[in-house]
Image 1 (tube, rainbow, N blue to C red):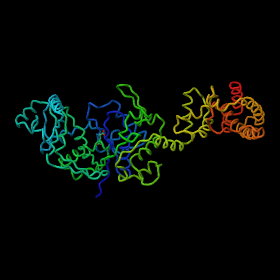
Image 2 (image 1 turned 90 degrees about the horizontal axis):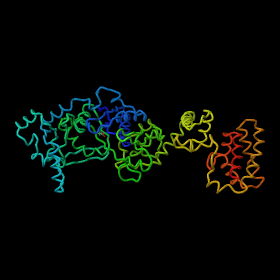
Image 3 (image 1 turned 135 degrees about the vertical axis):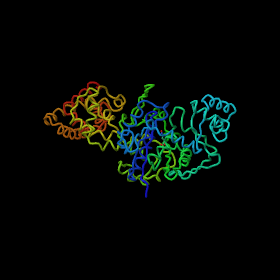
Image 4 (image 1 turned 120 degrees about the vertical axis):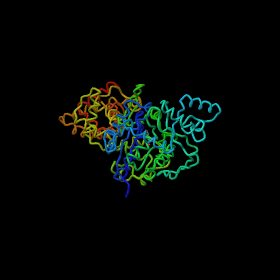
Length: 513
Ligand code: GLU
C-alpha cells in the first residue's frame, strides 16, 4: 500500500520566522496537498536557553496571514497531540532504549572539563571532538567501570546521553534533491541526544517525533544536511529504517548579489523585509520590518517564494495557491541556491495588487487618508484608486501617487518649474483660466462634462495660438499637481472639479508669475 504523505514544518521558536523558513513550510504544504496528504506544525522548543517569548505566537500568526492551513499541530490539535515538544514526555525512554541496545551512552564530563579540553586542543591548533577516537579517554559509561557508572547515577551526578557512532561505517542517504549523500561515521561526533536538564536535544526529539507522527517526507533547509547522517543512524538504531521518511534538503535563499545566505542584515541594508510579519525584539526593542506591514499581499509572497528555488518547467510566473499545488514537484527544485530579488518581489505584488477590487483598496486608502487628517468621500476615493492603482506596487504608495487629488500643491517642484515654466507661462495660463471659467459655467456643476470640454478647448486653443503644446500642458500640470508627474490631465480636472482646477491655476500664476 502507498504510504500516506505526511509532512511537518518544525520551527524552533527562537525568534521571528525567516522568510526562508516560510518557503520551507510552503514547499511542505504544496507537496502534502499535491499528494492529498497532511501538513503538520510541530514546535521544537526543547532548547530552553534559546526560547524567545512571543516567537511561537508570531509563527502561528504568520501562517494565518499567509493562509497556509495546518491539518494537525500546535493551535489545531490532532491524533498525535501534543505537538509542542516541551509538552511531550516520552523522549527519555527512547534515549534509555538506545543505551540498552548499545547505541548510546552516559557521559559525565562536566562543561568545565569539556571547555578545558577544547581550549587545550585549540592551543595545539586542533579541534576537539567527542567521538570514537576520544571517548575512551573521557568520563562515560563506555570508559568507566560499571559499578562506577552505577554509583554516579545513584548519586545523581549530572550526565548527558550521547549517540555512539560506530567507528567503521559509512552512512548512505538518498536525498530527493541531491541524490546520494555519503558520510563516514568515523568523522562524526557523538552528538548529545539527551541533556542534563532532562530534555532531549533537537536530534532525538526530531527523529522520535517524525517516527511517532508517521512523517513520510522531511523537507527542510540544507543547513540540516550535516545532521542527517545522525538522523539516519538513529532510525537504524531504533529499528525504524523501514518507515524512515524520505529526505529533501532545500537550497539556500541567497542575497540579491547572489552569494551567501540571505540575512536580516541584507534586508536592513537593501530595504526589504526578511520576515513575514513585523517583529519587535522583546529584549532590545529593535523592530524588524515584515512583508505584511510593508504592504505585501499574502498571495504575492506565496507566489514569489514558490518560484525562489522551484520552477514549473515553463514560462508561467503567476500562480495562485491551487495552481501551485497542481504544478509543484520536488524534482523541479533546484540544487543551487536561489537569489532573492527585491524587484521581483515588487513585481509580484504589483500583479496581485491590481487584482484587488477597487472598493477594497479604497477602504484601505481611506484609513491612510484619515491618518493624514483627510476626510474623503468613499466614492471619490474609489475613482482615484481606479486612476492611480496601476502606478502602485503597494497600497502604501497610493498617497504619493495621488496626494494632489486631495490637497492643492503647497509648493511647486523647483526643477520642474525651472525647466518648464517660461516667462510667457503666467499670461498663457491666466488666459486659459478665464476660458475655463466660462466652460465651467456651461457645464453647470457636471465635472466630467467640464473636464471633457476643457480638454477639447485646450487642444484647440493651444493649436490656434500656435503655442508649444507640451510646454503649456506641462505648466498646467505644474499648476494642478505641483510637479510634472501625475495621471492624464483631463482625468485630473474631472476629479478635482472645475472650481478647484481654476483656483489652482490662478494660484500658480500668482506664485510663479
Ligand atoms: N527545529 C528545526 C528548525 O528549527 C527543524 C529542522 C527540521 O525540519 O528537521 O529548523
